[in-house]
Image 1 (cartoon, rainbow, N blue to C red):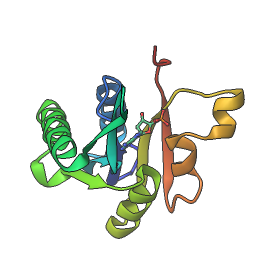
Image 2: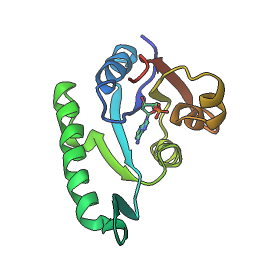
Image 3: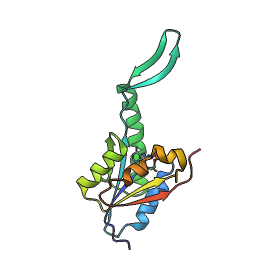
Length: 150
Ligand code: AMP
């Protein structure tokens, strides 16, 4: 038993989320609370392409609302898959690393679990969510190695 009792699992809702949650579950003490956190980055407008009279953007309200519904459904499906109640599912808005730090401090978590693709070279210099969360985290961080995305 690891002793971690307040575990925050950061999920990007891609297919890599399930193995990351499974790893967190395997580390959790019997009485541990597992919280899933997804952070949606706000967009001002969506670029639709260039037509003869210039680039076309659509207002984000509609698109963002629809996207939010779809992503929320995915978060709920993960909750069902891992038997995590709705009050353990957190759909936040903002910059992922900043919101994850804020949530962890607010909730006084003792472990953050997230995925990493083991970036090298330029990717490392550009940073990643895992790097940003690791730097400045107020508790332990477990980066679960997941396969490279296509
Ligand atoms: P990335 O740095 O984008 O390759 O993502 C690495 C890991 O960070 C993912 O496997 C998730 O655990 C976490 N992550 C990435 N984006 C988000 C997000 N928008 N909300 C919550 N966690 C995220």
